[in-house]
Length: 338
Ligand SMILES: Nc1ncnc2c1ncn2[C@@H]1O[C@H](COP(=O)(O)OP(=O)(O)OP(=O)(O)O)[C@@H](O)[C@H]1O
Image (cartoon, rainbow, N blue to C red; front, side, top):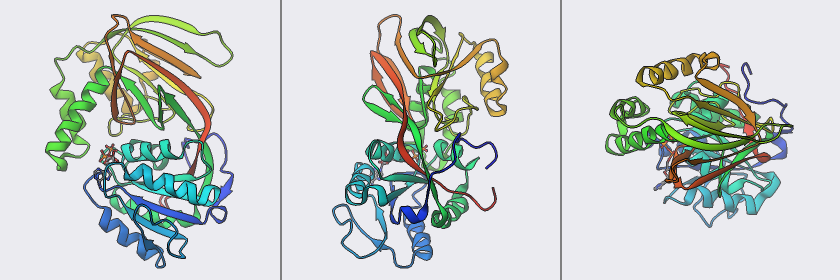
């Protein structure tokens, strides 16, 4: 795969993980879960539909489970891990929130997970498969599960949660919060909600005075006081529906990528967003990037900090981030067109 987000080759083949559960997240994207279930049955005619609490009741290697409530993604994954351990894999069809929930449920277990993009932004999936694959691509990926390979990836531990893709704070998170509110009102907006949200937050305060400390590999910890408009840490490369703040991040290299910017005015933010697309922001003197094993950050004024992991918003006084190498096993799927 060109521009691969993996630094090491896969370790396992599909024969070693024959027990498959497709978890179809009904809260994600444009609500294609039922359509996708039919496509899975076309690929795996002996697959059985099961609900939470019914794992393994049929003698079938492949189960299709539609979520019936907000906690079902993680509960269905936990149940599968408990039942099949190192023989198991959960493919989650959903967006970044659903992927985050599966990764949190399976971190530290032997069960693997894979991703069939079916959300709105699908930023984690874009790391894996290039630009948004669309519905047709998702169908191809269902077929590709028959040739999956598996390898461990890192997760960020952010306070008490795991992050599979990207952590960011401040103005980014305000944009995200607005975009989510717009998507709830107008589901058909899809990822255009992020652009609309940038326009709606144009007069918000964009820079925050931060106190932070980070640890680069084999170096003493560095402490900083800095006014930042953008502050991003991740193992994934993209956020916000395809913006690419961390273009060189690897999912499995044992380190996270950190980007922080200086205080940017409106024009500076516009330039940064445009150069994210091209990956040219790395040469800007207003943008600082490095690789880290851990980061801690808080607002200099002691106020609570607004932050998000994988598009899920949180608020806390301080944030402790630690990269956990090889924390969970991921299925690597190849699109035919790659
Ligand atoms: N049946 C359900 N009822 C209510 N919530 C559900 C149900 N099934 C799944 N969910 C929740 O809906 C949320 C869907 O968010 P997700 O991030 O996956 O999709 P998205 O917001 O469309 O995509 P993205 O984050 O990539 O923009 C998840 O938190 C998931 O747990």
